[in-house]
Length: 419
Figure 1 (cartoon, rainbow, N blue to C red):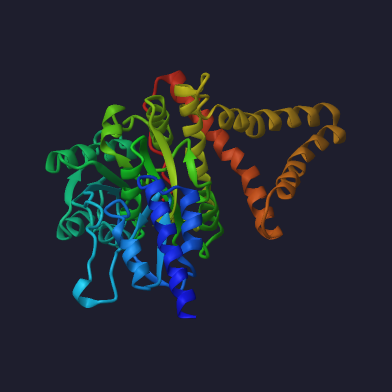
Figure 2: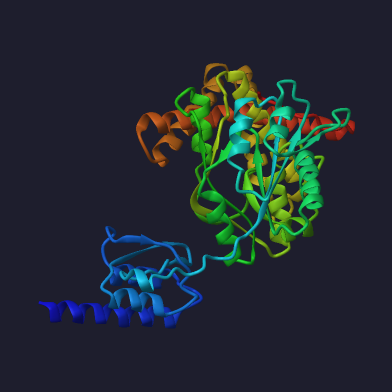
């Protein structure tokens, strides 16, 4: 029996050595899958280290008959090598510390801002940009060691302008930082996100920005919060755009000139358009990133938020809607179709043909039914999502009209707030 156990450990040692030598710099998905088979069940000891340091540790551990379990994410494997014997115990040096700075923006966020700033405790420097708070947010941020910028509110305010101001200040106080985490004052980072996001960017040098899963803090408090929770869901991997809470590579962000100050909404997808045009990629990491607190409890708030989305669709299509990008071109066309053109056509048909003309309005419940059938999940959830998806076209169309009005009259865009 002991000989069999010894032979088993020898085979595992050889397998571990082969895995490491074959792909010491890129422990890809195949290597990860095989290594899980080699190293065994998940009840083994958790260890963290860098497999690039040396080949001795996995072999040493296995020869000492110490069971190990490697925890992987993407192409990074951490192994903290130790032996049973205390006199020869050793730990490998962890990956080099990757310093990052953070820029938080907000106004009258209260306790949410406190949680936000506390979640940035691992940042080398934190800049808070305030846009006219009256609840003591500035003092709160100063007390927690953040550098504070109070925006001149005589100038049109946008989140893009606030983030750019915060980024410039961050570069002044910490010019050696390679990464910047943008976060809103109504959100807080998950504790493990900075390490995971930074490690991902460190290993993928062609990725200009990364985000993780955004969760709604209180989706149970209102249907509108729940809708936000569903809105945050998205595929893991390479994506076309991220939101306002994201980890950016400083070099990439500076190369495209940051956010556009004049955009009242949709500044993050627009930034990503320019990043991708420069050859950078955007990625959603398979990790929880932050908790968001929409605090939407009224239909009017939901309406305003969707009006802002419609405005951003129109503005995005105006800026980058031409081929090959076609940024927000479909979203804008869809809004005009369902929110403006079809209602006018149904009205005209009803006035012209009477009852049979008004029957054209059935196209809306039919479209809702189609969305329900094509979606997944509990029937009640699918029905709610389909109904609000359809209803959303109407405030979005109002946002489209507001953008068209501003363009024709040469007006400066004004912020559309829902809180």
